[in-house]
Image (cartoon, rainbow, N blue to C red; front, side, top):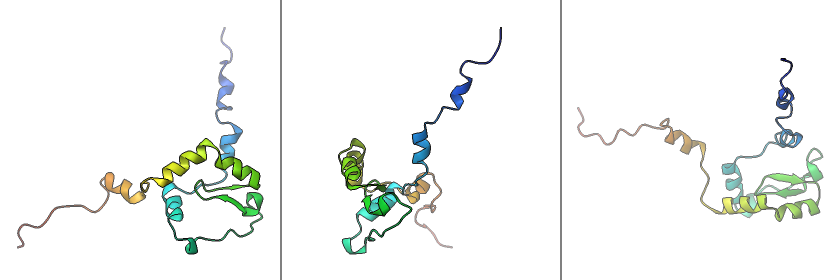
Length: 119
């Protein structure tokens, strides 16, 4: 009787390698990507060659804030469900910002209403 719990090793396998790899590359927030998309063409930054990024930083999806290793991989990403959902999300109204969250939580400027009498 007794012995080890049969599910003891489950804790080790909680996250797959893919999820750990995803957290390696930090992604911009929705509001920052939305601002970049609605920036005029002249103000957008040009893709410079960067050896640390996949594909030398030349194959980039602006909507998803991701770099790809080749044109074929990027074009395959453009056909994916995840990219199409992101396109629809960015085409809609502006996403919530930190200011919206603070106002909703009651941490913004207090609104005491107009002064009725001054003394």
